[in-house]
Length: 368
Ligand code: ATP
Ligand code: MG
Image (tube, rainbow, N blue to C red; front, side):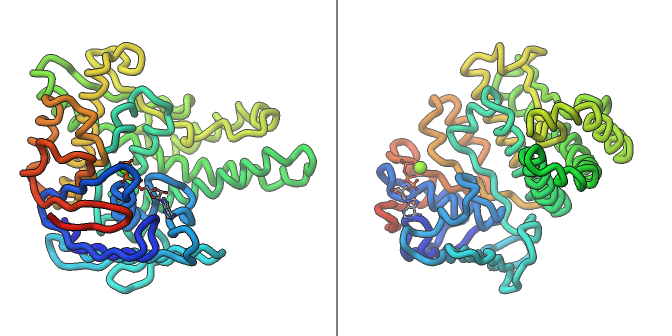
């Protein structure tokens, strides 16, 4: 899988960009605030239909412009393909195209341009809040399974509507009438999410443990433990059992939800815990162990995408190498010898001989 060419119009600080890339390492070098991350964000948006930086797509449009247009030419194992996304400033739905065919939703993008993003925040993902770990699962699964992407989008809409009911029912009691229906559907869709997440996490654990073992010289054992709705004893149970367990949890929290005005129960609270040799990384991991485990997770994410699609996903490394010591840099660089990689950094230093270098300055790209 590789991105051959990217065209941007009024995207972030790019008024107009037309760039060609090499199949191996593409090094994007430039001072701060020149547009390096913006470029990776554009690639990520075409890959997933979402920005990894903002939930508000309008922020992607260059200040003062009315819309932005992103276009990519790709080569996969089987054939060439094009992708296009247009986001409007005004209240008009964004448009996504694959090979010129307009898509109904972002679920259609699944597997067309697979990417794995690795940025400095990812190094803290095992220590930070649960949202970061859910995002990791969701981003990977949405790329792997269109059905998951569709379920996640529906769950998000239901959760938003239920939250509104819970927030406003005190002043408008009639809002409570459809609540049982929302709960029922959220339990149905929630069961689907849990089913996928449990299986994915299991595969991720196996792959990540391999990398972590290798990096720690065979000394450390990394494990991942899925944490979901507490009434679920076995996340691998049949979907119907998951559904019933979610309903039970909802019933038990019915009062608490009304009183707090918040959606307290469901897989939107899911998390996973990483353990090294049986101890929680979050509480007991050293800085180095936490970083190594995070790197292992990312490499595992890439491996699972590769295994599933049969193609190496495009790796987007945003400023992450500069955060690593030489030993960890080498470990990552050794693991990414195959496939296409985009690396952003402020100084090239020891990276220049890796591939094609491009200089990013004020929303322009210059080769050399
Ligand atoms: P760093 O090395 O600090 O990470 P960077 O090269 O990755 O820098 P980016 O985050 O890609 O920087 O670009 C940031 C620049 O883009 C900022 O100057 C910001 O003001 C500008 N920018 C962000 N959004 C928009 C927008 N919608 N329209 C125009 N400019 C924007
Ligand atoms: Mg940046």
